[in-house]
Length: 315
Image 1 (cartoon, rainbow, N blue to C red):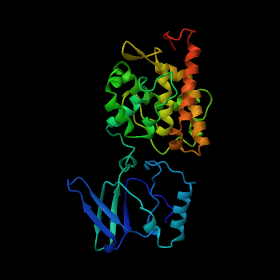
Image 2 (cartoon, helix red, strand yellow):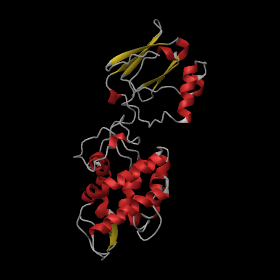
Image 3 (cartoon, rainbow, N blue to C red):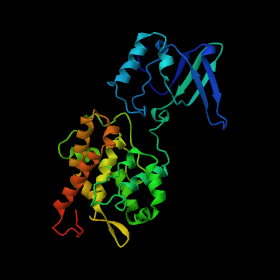
């Protein structure tokens, strides 16, 4: 492969035989899709680091096998792998020159996931499930792990226990804003205690994070996996209590609580993911991880209050 990386904007010209390219027209006329086979040594070094939406672990067994298949040039790479998907501004194939032209303009245009998209209601329900103390009481040992591990379960709970979600109206907006705030402030909260947040492998610096529920927050140039964020955010369930049929906070300001105690939670989360082979998905499904963070929020709360367990406290 060519070693000199391209710069954007640019147009790529890939040599492809007519019998190795197919064009599929979208029925709604929004875009076209080209499927093409091109010699790998003819593909330039496309800068995908900032736009690749997938978390990559190039040290995994699968990644090493893919690399080996590519470098061996045994003619089987296209059979064993799905190849590269590029979202382009435009593309066209010239039968005379036998070249496929791909026009690239800017990195954020060609990302399949990094752009700001509408919020899925399923994600909102999953976030609310994290704080539902009717379904997951604070005097029990059950944790809302399925809010992360299952796409269907939060919807089932919402359908079956709508009254419990309706009782969350007083804190609904706070929960959604806290989800944004926790991620937006993660680097600053961690580094205020002398940490080096960006040195941790879990932090994806190839991607950026946009915020939906707190419009005053600026995007941050990193992304944290939900397998780490959900258990951390779910630990704040301890700060919720039911009063007169509605759910309310035990503290006056959950964001200030995070600013004050967040560093210990973030560090625990980062260390746990690292101990699990830098696999945030595995960590996010581990109930003991949720319990550890939950207990840390519980201890932090008792640092702020007197013996009276029913007393609201100020951060």
